[in-house]
Length: 245
Image 1 (tube, helix red, strand yellow):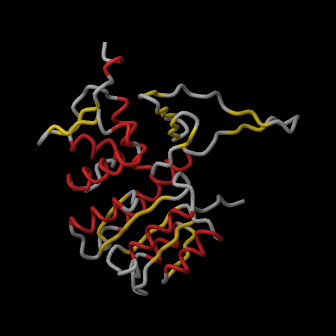
Image 2 (cartoon, one colour; image 1 turned 180 degrees about the vertical axis):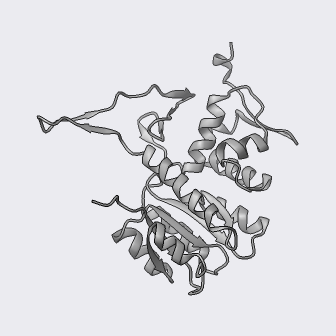
């Protein structure tokens, strides 16, 4: 039996979007193309793709990126491609939840690598179950200790963030940013370091990194007092006073 192929949704109102790369994309993945927001919404609900590749140049791109909200943020990755990338378009893409922002005319290998990288992260976010052959019982893998900051619990293995008993819906990028900060408290993390560790060296601007951090603070307001921007250098997550001994 052949291995299950990753489902990739390609969404753009421009029928020629990704024409040059589509044959290679279809050779590596299970691909469906949507040329309207309605078609993208339908495919996300009914076909359940793992990855969405969106056109950052088309007028409906914002609405198309936002259709990711139809799925759990930890089960659907988003890559935005632009034929004419600008800092403004890049910032908008990340503000709307994109995991990667690439030039549409870049090498196909870069797109394929990002898809595989997102798939690995999404798979890691799923609950790990192990079947016992002689019974119908499913055994859950041992829970990993949470990293605690104020009233927030971060579970690295499960890609899960909880506030008390409520789950905080973070995007994969927001989760990686949060994990980077809580794993390095009281340390100055430069934007270049964050780009290497969180975005795996992708060509993301400092402005877009700032935008993602701003979005993370809005998602988790408790961070705002303690996540400090050191002008021209980077960010420090300071410990609350009672923990800073």
